[in-house]
Image (cartoon, rainbow, N blue to C red; front, top):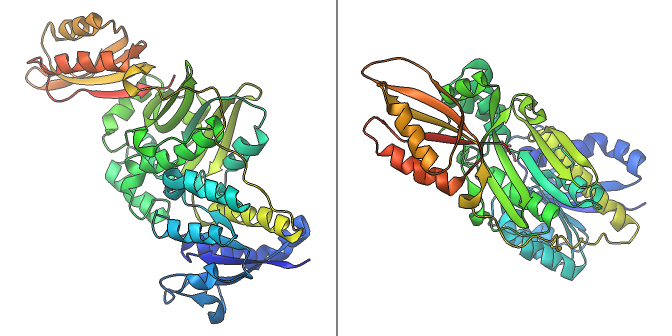
Length: 430
Ligand code: HSE
């Protein structure tokens, strides 16, 4: 069987992992899947950096065109991340009739329509298992294994850095800053960790899951996104006392024919399966009309897990190339009956709210009176400290409320003399 020739763009952590895997396990993969893959060229801007893998100098280049213009190369693996120049390289590879494997969530979330459209036109494949959930086979599950299902909801913990930080805060009482530092040391955070903690990394991944689950290209800019940067240790503690954990959830679900897509910190019962997802692990909890509830769990980042997904994509394509039968791109943009997006203001949820209020008679009555005016009912309330002169936390959980009603009520409460600072609100899982 012929060796399927592959070119790699990006020789960083994941690129090195892919090279190591194919070098160390190429023979095993050949036995298992009957296909041989050869990396014939690797392009990177920086060839001086030491990598823990041996590659003949002749295979290395700083010129990406040596891959994109080489007619012998069937598969281009893009592992540089970011939108440009990755997009330029991917489009050029597709135009040249090459298959593409990418782990680039930002690129697919922003330009997936164009990229998948071009691949279909050229009769080639784009595979992207590593773009969401690292080694977790969620892309295959949604696009192939759950093909017979109408997907009803997807709840994902798909940013390892945020989950690691929240877990450290909850379990060890660590500060946000020190937990972020250790996530960076572990190598799970993005080069710019702002994308991890502000929720954008999750939003990129959610846009990909939404396309596969609901057949809709969602403009990332239209996804409601709130990160974990304002979560305080005390909110994690108070939530825990009521039996809840705080997780950064990426949610896509059908609600009355509309698509409700959002990323935000969420209180979920400590008994929920997702609450058990700790540290840098990822999990995607999917509800479908035939599967019921399914939980996919595993390492969402890291060299080995991510390389596992990239190599699996390369092997799938290589098999088809070896037998001369191209894998076609499925039509991901299908009609799932969704008619438009649900605005965040119309979303109904239960809420955790923390007010900082002066400790004096009548304050709680004033707060609950205003909430009642907007038909917001309180399910639990507690004052956390006693202090005559200073503001103390009043923490409550509400029953279901419409977001825009809660916002209006809170803006009135905020203006009360007894209230110090902006109330903190965290949505609860629903
Ligand atoms: N920075 C990402 C995370 C890993 O923390 O999950 C790659 O997607």
